[in-house]
Length: 461
Image (cartoon, rainbow, N blue to C red):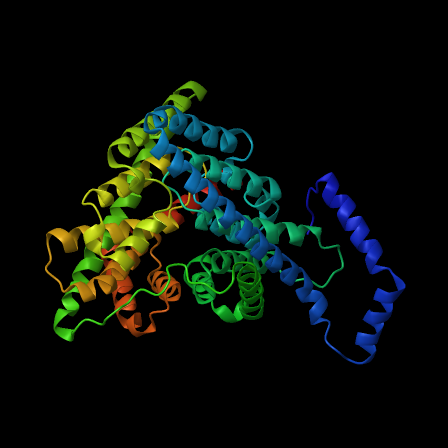
């Protein structure tokens, strides 16, 4: 497979090829062949190297993200009026980075990964570099962090998947010709699984997501590569961060069978809300595409930043960042501590932040929107014993995320692994299935699938 290689890639491949010609390497290869042993370790080496890199990068990204999120919130609390200057500037800066340095770095990152998987299957495999590369990964992280610094309502999980895919694609490009290697598609798919596993510390979620979203193919085609990479990336991140759960150990008490309708109803509501959130993102995106020229685009980004600043000024810090602290507050201190405006603020803030054109994740923010919507309903509409609130909040998180991604099983497994609440698995699966059914009445495709088609059109036009 021929690529247009960058100068540094050419030099690296040359050095790697020279290393392969070393006597000790040649003798090892001949020994393996003579003893009829497998050369699988050589074939798997690029996967293992890329997986370890993903684990390291995911941990570093998480640390920097958490630090900047805290700094942004602390700055707002100390100087609230400054948000009318800092937020529009940061939103505009995040957009400018993607516009001029790497347009493929804009948005979530998961649609780009999905498009790259499809490109790798056909004659357009050389165009994968436009979606996954070191340049795209660096711009992705920089734009995402700049948006966060401005108080933006964004996550890092979707961007982490694109960064992981970029690392795997780069390692694939650097493998010398003649090396017995796995396919380009396998590398990209495996990168996505490793990225999700490292981002959330959810290895099963990474595996399920490969089957349900990235490939929609039988896992047997990628089994060894995906399992190995998920383990290596997950163990690397756990080695650095220690064993942890994304959301800790909330107390979950199963509902009686007579109250099962509550899970169904809340899944229905949150699934519809997630689907309508997707429609709003698509509508704002379509409106922005009609604006031609740099000046009008810059004005639209600045206006979105100002609207978000007004929202934060009047609703406070619950609107800022990924929303993870809000979820923990609802799960460990009770939904009664959640202000009524948390859901509308998160919902609108997520839409404004994502639509500004920078790199922004909507995985974690969708989870927080679902949690806030259920908290609002439990505080104002339904009378439910407090001990059952956590189960319903988690079901709502699954419902909203499913409404956006249309991956009910991935959503259920992710929340299961984030909380280690295996006793609630059937409630989680029920919530995902009902939410997916409800969302299908609003949109036939997920947000990621629609955006994937747009990226494919851009790359193959």
